[in-house]
Length: 300
Ligand code: SF4
Ligand code: SF4
Image (cartoon, rainbow, N blue to C red; front, top):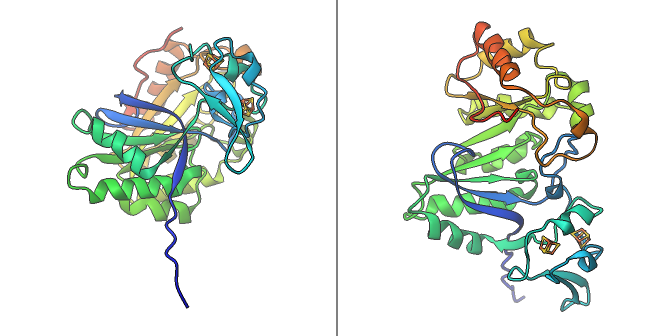
């Protein structure tokens, strides 16, 4: 019997690529934003990265620059086409999309993304994959990081994931051999608070934090402080006990809630002031948490 060799190309849906960032992991990093998220955070500051476009076409007629059109692809399915050269980045399409998506996402094969990494490799120390929730496209990440590690011209780059921590243990173990570190959000201490803010409980997040800590790959835990909403201060003793037993190399990064990009009820929540973030930092440090990192800028 003849055997046919089938090559499966791993492709990702990408909402944005930043060629240079110094806030998404250590050093200077190329940051790849993958589209789609499994959380529904009330305070999401990038809500158009949550849904995956189903090419319904609802946004097309709203584009004031005629940068969007709808066509049939080879298999007869409707497809929204975005013409980058015409786009004025007014964000109208993002605001009218009923699925919290974006018609400007691009599909990249691993090879195409490697070309982007190669082009930038002299100017960066590593690559961070974020989202949305990056780990929803785990096969792409694993293959991309594997190729980076296998290429002598690229293997000096560190490969990191920025995640909400919802990936299961099997998934983390799959990417672990080619992962240098991860930044994980802890959005609330209590399960109920986490569920209310994100739509999901946090038991997977703690499993993720524990696994990455055990493997010495937990680069950073991120706490977004929303004074009247998150429960970090109400649970300060338990929170500090937990954070202080993490590896000394793990940073505890505090972020201060602001309204930028936020929609819906979270716009009614008060922002976090510089004094409030400093109070939380000192409460943690007083209880023995090392490596607390304050936000570089608090706007209020
Ligand atoms: S971006 Fe939203 S509105 Fe536009 S085609 Fe996709 S799903 Fe429909
Ligand atoms: S962001 Fe670009 S594609 Fe979207 S509505 Fe504005 S001009 Fe059109």
